[in-house]
Structures are given as C-alpha cells and as structure tokens.
Image (cartoon, protein in one colour):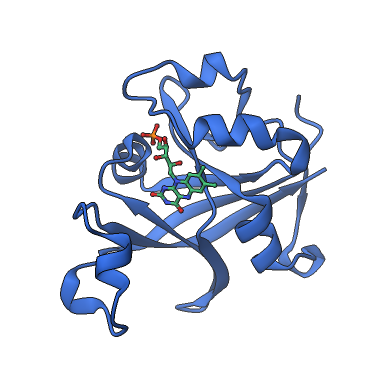
Length: 168
Ligand SMILES: Cc1cc2nc3c(=O)[nH]c(=O)nc-3n(C[C@H](O)[C@H](O)[C@H](O)COP(=O)(O)O)c2cc1C
C-alpha cells in the first residue's frame, strides 16, 4: 500500500488512446466511508478552462455516477494487463446489487479523502468542472443514437481538473 509518488504532468508519459481505450481504467468515487468503482474505456485527457483535465462519460444507470455527483470528485486508476479479469468483472456487475469490490479484492486508498484503487500503477485524482448529459439533439453523426442509445441510457460527460497524479 501507498508506494505512490506524486508527479507533475510533464513527467506523465502516456498515449491516451492506448491507456484508456486498450488498457482501460477504473473510475472510483465516494468517500472514506462508502465508495464504488467501475471500469471505463471511453474518455480522454486534455486541456480545458486553463487546466489539465480528464473527461469521462458515465451512463445514467451506473451506481458510480451517484457517488461522482454527490462528491464532485473521482479518481482514474490504471491497473494494466494483469488485472484484466478484475476490470472485466467490475465492468459487468453493479455495486448497487453486489459487494463487487470485496468480491474482486479491490484495495482502496485515499488522496485527500478521494478514493482510488491501490492496485493501480498510475492514478489521476479529478475534480469535476462540468457535467453535461448528452441528449439526442447533441449528436451530429447519423447512427450514434441508434447504435449506442437504443435503451435511452444516455451518458453524462464529465470534464474534470486533474488535481493530483500518483505513479509508482
Ligand atoms: C471495458 C469496459 C469499458 C466500459 N466503459 C464504460 C464507460 O466508459 N462508461 C460507462 O458508463 N460504462 C462503461 N462500462 C460499463 C460499466 O463499467 C458497468 O456498467 C459497471 O457494471 C457499472 O458499475 P456500477 O453500477 O457499480 O457503477 C464499461 C465496461 C467495460 C467492461
């Protein structure tokens, strides 16, 4: 536990397409009493409103969304290939119905009270700047609505300031 080091963004070397899209990440939110985590493979890293930011898209049905909305903070933990099965599990079962974090042996740690997954090799601590629920009139490409939202479970787009970067 806790062999993480704080680093600055100029030391962060990563290809976001690989890191997020292929490696996946765990979005964790809550507080020291209660937290939840889920797998995500959509999102990005960039610059907005003068800050280094991460963005994630979370569907309305996700239990994790309730924690993000309540606290206004979340973390992104990157665990890498050895935790693929754990991430598949955390991305297919809801913490609303099962104690999935215990089942998967998720170890939580906290940075300024914000939970993150200790098994990670890189952690981004994030503070929500904006939350925008996507709706049908937002789409500019034909087919998106039909392909991704036939169940009307729309994503909320969160843009969040990266306040701390922890790495091993
Ligand atoms: C590889 C992978 C990527 C995923 N990416 C996202 C995502 O970007 N946004 C999202 O809302 N759900 C995504 N999910 C689905 C959630 O992780 C899944 O619904 C999870 O069970 C939600 O858990 P919760 O209800 O405990 O929050 C993904 C699942 C997997 C397996």
